[in-house]
Image (cartoon, rainbow, N blue to C red):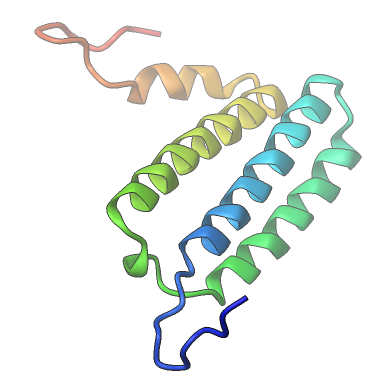
Length: 114
């Protein structure tokens, strides 16, 4: 196995994406806990996700990802935002009214009224 040259740049992309995948996996478990109405578990998982995100901040800057890695990162972040929204709706069902108020307008139409 060849020894990498010290001057060769390290590709942090796979490491960064693995952290995003780990956060996404924890978020899916958190969503299931929310569906199960297990809010103590949701809080524990939320703390674990915060810890994972802090570790992610300590890695290489995201601008060092290649185009494919940036695309995958955007997809994962989009899914994380969707999971977060689902957990929030389960925690606070009244937020559906706010969601409807701020939803994107349909093409050529008005906002949906609550």
